[in-house]
Image (tube, rainbow over all chains, first blue to last red):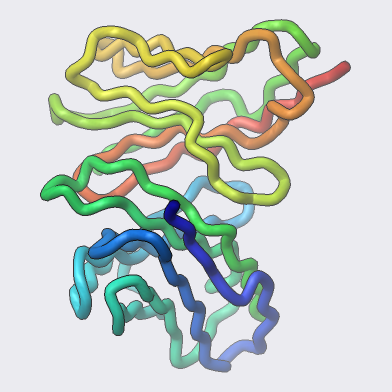
Length: 115
Length: 112
């Protein structure tokens, strides 16, 4: 069966510090991968998605970047965190079948607090 | 861009009763998917039910069912025989391409 991992689970960082959040998927090959952010009291907003190694699409211009160095690894990064980067970050994966309309499965999330 | 609106920030239901959560969306597309996700206090997003727009039949998953009105762009979730474990945030989502567009959520409280 497929599983998705995220770490760390919780992170507190000072403003201006770098960020690296990691997501890995097991039990599937060539998944579509996604990074979402959930601000307090709001729904999820898609930040990035990837349909293959080295292929990253950005949905929202911001202080963050994403990379996919391996097939089942997705990394969210920032060189300098802002207060507005605080939130709950969720990674998700979906199967690849030549269609984007595949169910997305979410990881447990990372709670990021920028002070 | 497609928008998803959940007009009920909070809802309350008694155990064993039925509750309906509302969702409307705005789109000009004819082919899309709609979802209801549950987010318990653990904050893990759990898929509850999904509906393909080209299917007229409303989706059903055990105690969860939807009322999909394509012309009205409405997609409500009905929870029957509510249980304490149903207490959570519920998010309606619209899928266009790769992105899931989420509403702001409805917080469901289940009372004994």
